[in-house]
Length: 454
Image (tube, rainbow, N blue to C red; front, side):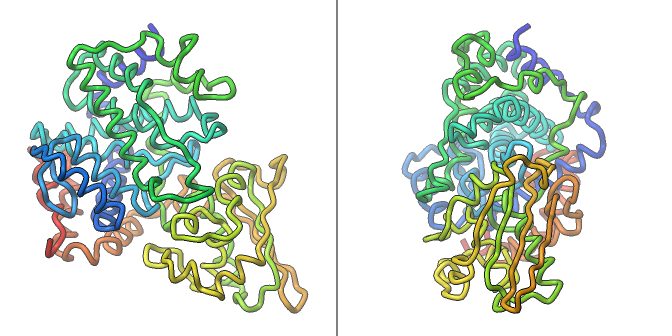
């Protein structure tokens, strides 16, 4: 049995009864978090642009475009909702792969669930299958980041393909072909972290459309390569500049429920700099003010230095969300790194920019001080009175080792959606998600997704 066939069999064999209670509970929290992101970010400029694109296609269907309430075919609705969910850097994160599974899997299962009038339990199981498939591929192909491939859109194609096959009840053979076909469609580049571009906001939809389409191609009779992952000219060998981590693909779901390692984001920026923000907050707790700082040094592991240490001065909101210096300065000056803090006004703020200019970045090349792989950081500040203070954070808030509580997740959901839906609707969504595995139809949840006044 090939690795593609092994993964396909795991997807097909997954049953609700076999999923541990804590995995079910965590999946519900991740589902709620993604719905909140989609609602909150559905009217941002890039979200509206993609929505206009989808409307031009005039592909009517039964699947809801979140926030707008429009019904489109499943693929177009999922495309829009993926852009919304990934629209402002608050989607869930798996730090072992730096990927965001929800934005590729949740839009897929909700859109198809509506199309098929699936039960909430069927949608939830397909969601879990999508997470597990996506994260196995992401871990096996982790080195793809060295070739500047996006860690969500590329493996996200396999999460969407797996979720599609599971929800539509495909055979293991058809699911395997869908995964194989997805190897020819998965794509996504990360130059946006250096020179900007709102295309970053659309990368989740790249994975969604590739995965859904690959699975539906397989349903129609198109076949994929038998050794799509491990063959001589296979996807993993082509995308990785070094040997893939094959054993990640061999793990059964029961061996390791990888979805358990996916955390929520408390801050509205790339997760690689969240430990920097927590270190800044620890300095603030000591009484340090932005005006007290002469200069600062941020130390992170090489991966994070490449991801969030490369931008020395952001020029727009997108680049600010990938700039560790800016995250630090924003926290010191404004005291918050939330949705309403990442604005062009703050990017242009002369006080913030001055502190950014006095921040240096350095890599702990041998990872002797920063020994954990979850995006740790050391922030050292030299104050104007000559004192040097230092804070180290190994696990930022939101990591699996330092998780946000359920109450934190609810607070985030309510805060994100406060300007989009009423408190009554917000509570109705929370209640429906908590009981999603008891819903006869997923429409009992998705019918709540229209923003007030649209």
